[in-house]
Image (tube, rainbow, N blue to C red):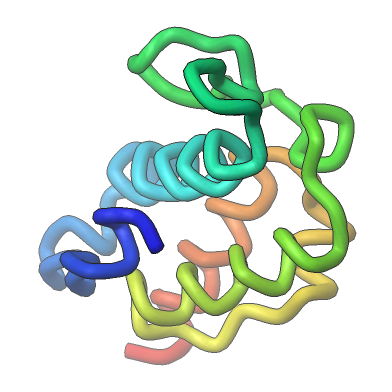
Length: 109
């Protein structure tokens, strides 16, 4: 279990409307999940602490269906929205998944 699991809080409502904030949070979740999969001492993504790139493909960088399911659970908890595994498989990138989250934030409010 990572610190993200232990301390994750939903984003404040004013931040939820900013697509850049949503994308940053989604990138952090991608990075956290893929880093958990990396060997000890190494980052799975190979990217610096600034985060997962918006165009980086979750599955090409080591993601799989189990990690996608965990990502969906974290997205739901982090943003309090109903995203699906289909959103991750279709979107694949931070930018596309963040857009799906952002679209649902607007639809569910």
